[in-house]
Length: 421
Image (cartoon, rainbow, N blue to C red; front, side):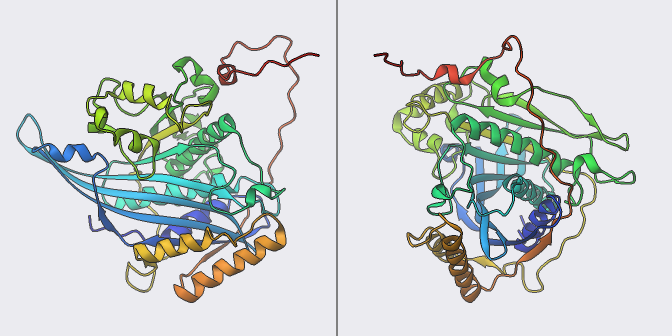
């Protein structure tokens, strides 16, 4: 595991994705990350298996996007690179390297100057950077995981009161994440260089690969018959303008493990996650994956009328040669903070004096944060000017004469009966 995670390359991949937004907007991408540090296995109970050994390194990454002098979007992720050694029935040791990333937070401040899918493009750029890093480690795929739970704000204090911020309810957020991961995976597989959208590939483009990513989604408490509401219609390969088959995403309902498997042996336990907290209880040792999902549905965070979702996708690594991105002139660890310094960055952005409820307050808070970063850490940024086409707004469809025969998750939420006087 000698490959390094270059923060300039991450920022460049995100900037390349943002470049496809409608033309005429200037953004600055800033990436803050920790150095690698050893952590426990993502499946800690397997350490009691004498035929299995694992060495896991982790890093934390914070991506921030500014427009002008104001923070407009952010993403925080936790990445894990594991070297495993397992002796199977053949008694021959099998060594493998796995890369898993857990997207913990995605947020906007409400200060974007015009409406555009900035957060979605930021996620796509980050997923593209994961593919680049994983290819350097010579792994077959990289896992991207997230727990979708609606909250009014994640990174930007008081932004829920900003009139420019569009917040989503439970089901709205789940659908947003499904569409976002669909786009991000297709984008990363189609164009690892991060310069072209899948539907705008040039005739001589050779970055496209005909491959399929496998994506899993489950809403605890919902049945498989409700999957079409979240996942939408499935489609096979799409054909680009040059006649080349574009990559597709194969969506499946459930966790990415067999229902009868022992949860402790296979389900990843990420920090600050409902699954991790549930499996930490002593009586869960014999739970299967199916039992885990049943108990999640009545847990405090996933039950009680809440609608949350788990997403877990396996992104195949491109076999084509990746384009070169700018790198640091210094060592690979430049810009990689200690764990304590990274926590200080989070404390600064989460400070109770930060205020993104209005434009003036947001600009003041943004300047305060960026000045702190520049003076203490002096981390370079990547600037980008967008040159993509304008967004075509879809016309409102006429109401059908008869309601379509589809399942609606909202029917599972008991509504309070109105009292007539």
